[in-house]
Structure formats: structure tokens, C-alpha cells
Figure 1: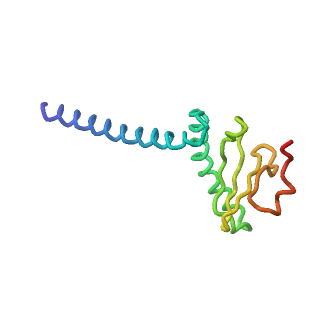
Figure 2 (figure 1 turned 180 degrees about the vertical axis):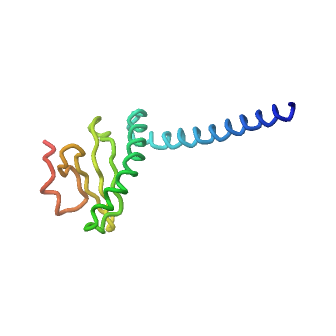
Figure 3 (figure 1 turned 180 degrees about the horizontal axis):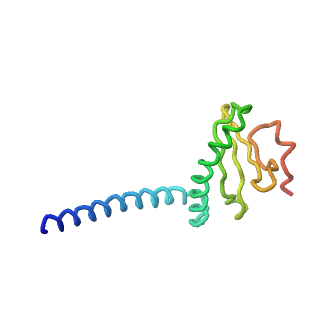
Length: 123
């Protein structure tokens, strides 16, 4: 009976240590992201959760776009600059990216010079 209690206490201590390490890592990562001037922690958590969820769905969606072999990654991100909504960011082999509104599919951002005329006006 005494050894059973020691084993149970050992398991509880191990779980607390692992949980503490995970929480420390998560909070440390959030703290590093606070340096960019945006202190909206809830927005960062939403962005992190949506990027994890979208990475699973983007794996299947990028494989269905077999014609675009230049695509490296595709993720859905929270639009922190606007404070609401989501956009889909597509990154290509050459290091460039394009950002599309998640709801309308409209091109809203791009690193390519050829796309600059197609972007919405900021006025």
C-alpha cells in the first residue's frame, strides 16, 4: 500500500513538471511575440490556434492543388493589423508570398512587384 501511494505521488509530480514545462514554453513564446508592439494576447492565442488548425487543413488543400508545385506553405492567420477577420497566406519556393482574404478570396497583400497594381487601395 505504501509503495502504491509513492508511485501515484511520483506520477503526479511528473505530470506537474511536464505541464509546467509546456506552460513555460508557451508563455515564453507569447512573451517573445509581445515585442512587436501588439499586446493583444487573446489575438495571439487565436492566431496560434487557427494556424495549428489550418496547417492540418492546408496539407490536404495544398495536395489538391497539384499544379502549384512552387507552393511551400499555406496558412490561415488572424488579421491583427485590422483587429478582426482572417487571411490566407501562401508562401512560395522563391521566398515570396501572397495574402488572400479568407472570406472573399481577394488578393490583399503580396511581395511580388507584378501584383502591386492588383492590390486594394489603402485610401
